[in-house]
Amino acid sequence: MSPVSRPIPEFAWGTRTFVMGVLNVTPDSFSGDGLAPAGRSVSDVVEAAVAQARAFIEAGADILDVGGESSRPVAVYGAHDAVAEDAELALVLPVIEALAASIEPGILISIDTTKGAVARAALAAGAGMVNDVWAARRDPDTARAAAETGAYLVVMHNKDVAEYEHGVVPEVVAWLRAAAEDAAAAGVRPDRLLVDPGIGFGKNPDHSLEVLHRLTDLKDAIGLPLLVGTSRKRFIGEILGGAPPDDRLEGTIASVVAAIADGVDVVRVHDVAPVVRAVRVADAIVRRPEAVASASDLPGEIRLAGIAASGRHGVSDEERSAAQPFEVDVTARADVARAAADDDLARTVDYAALQALVMGRVEAQSYRLLESLAADIARATLDRWPLIGEVEVTVRKLQAPMPGPVRGVGVRVRLGRDLG
Image 1 (cartoon, rainbow, N blue to C red):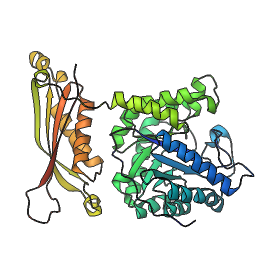
Image 2 (image 1 turned 30 degrees about the vertical axis):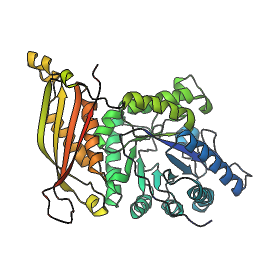
Image 3 (image 1 turned 90 degrees about the vertical axis):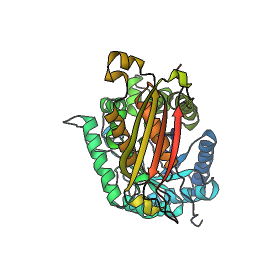
């Protein structure tokens, strides 16, 4: 089967939680769902993988993560033979080619590998994401392959020994920052880079729980979209009194919902259908559709005008390759009567904190559309200050590539919520 050229989908991070379904094209898997047991022919493996992928898509999956080598931690599940490059390619390439030829273009195909050669072949066959559990540290060519093709890259924290002298979260943050910087230096597009804290990898159950407890801190510190994989993990089994992997669904769903409340962007799961249903309910609560409150409910108005920040936003690759100047206005409407009566900063919006939030959102992400950037700032503002009922954000691009002279281009977005 010849490779199929596929467009790489654009995901608007922060608008909802995206679901990645696990396709283990392996003879073994800690979760017991390997699709390539000994004796199964290649055609049968491909047929099983495509059938599972179709079920995932029908259930609501956005990403299919194809892996040909079990990444289960040796410290937990014991030593296992490494899969040779040729053997891994023989497992994953026929599946990726079949998926690329048969599934709709809006579904992203991911290759779960730590080998640059496997990543390159998979991307050429139709994948659009590299999910590297060693963050291109074992083989930097995975990052180079993603950079050269414009693919997404997931860099995951990993460690051989679960020891953290200065605390697990500070070390994970520092490690992922460095890995993301290395990936960017290799040419990976900022809007195609995600981080994964590596739940269960180089971490005992207490470490994993601490990371999950502090996902908001981790995401804020790194400033990139966050992927989390808790599905069927060991820490869930321990909490549930030794439950085996296939009896950890409820625990997986609980961890997914908690992660959504902390702003996770992608969840990687085995049981797609029930998790998607839980994700939709959690998103409806956490990212509920904004309903603009009436003006009588919002007597106060807080304005910051002309916030200057640099970012990489635009339709063309040139616009996203170098930072450009942007200007942002924010008008937040809220009931500030108690703040006025008590002269208490805690009852209103800290202007400096709002400015820092705006600058951070402009600098951290990379969007094709100003509309997406403005909406991201508006949502982040509402999330940060519950007292704000409505926010209006104007984003101006001061050096837009236009056919004729203009003073600048801009968009205005207004979001709100029912304070009742």
